[in-house]
Image (tube, rainbow, N blue to C red; front, side):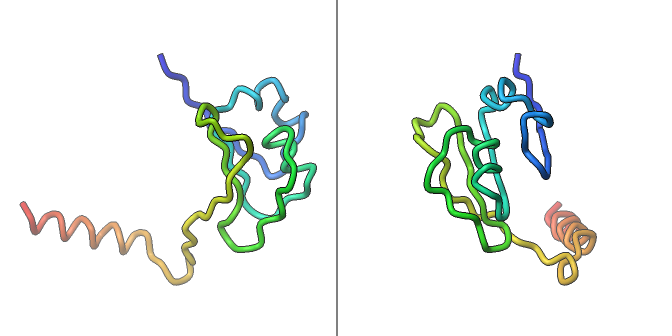
Amino acid sequence: MGVFAIFSTQQPNASNIPTEIRDNLSVRVALGSMSSEGYRMVFGETTGLSPAIEKGSGYIYFDGMGWDSPKPFQNPWLDYRNFSFVGEIERLIKSNSDNF
């Protein structure tokens, strides 16, 4: 049986997520500019990770993929001031209802 848990924190340290739990997480994502200590707390032993500077950028690590270290990651950026989720959902519902 699968167990899925999502942990989220703005300050990753051993008091928020103990290292024993962190080391058992199969997917780890760090977005934004973090210190080298912050990256170490998320990914464990890391070298050469430079702070992410673009909005939505960071690093991702998948356990079991044979990766030696986290890879750069770019998350899509949506400007909430210029994008209406409700409007987009209404548009999708309307376009799908036209097909049935």
